[in-house]
Image 1 (cartoon, rainbow, N blue to C red):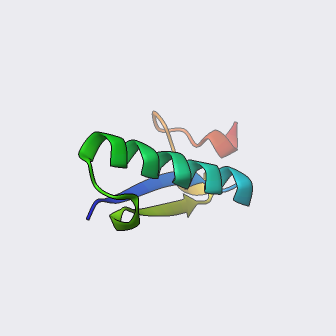
Image 2 (cartoon, rainbow, N blue to C red):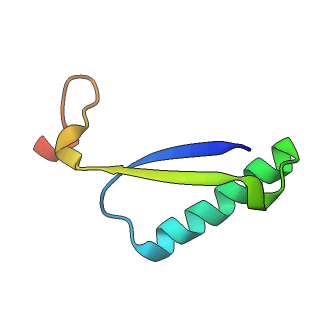
Length: 61
């Protein structure tokens, strides 16, 4: 049973998240042969203030 975690900054719409989950499920099913009903996708959203690249938070720029 594949479990996929996707980490995103907050701000996506429900429609965007729905499409993401569907496409990730399809990709995992195609590449692993796992049936879609056995694939779990977890979306882990974080506040932009809790993310940084190269020592800088994009929310500060």
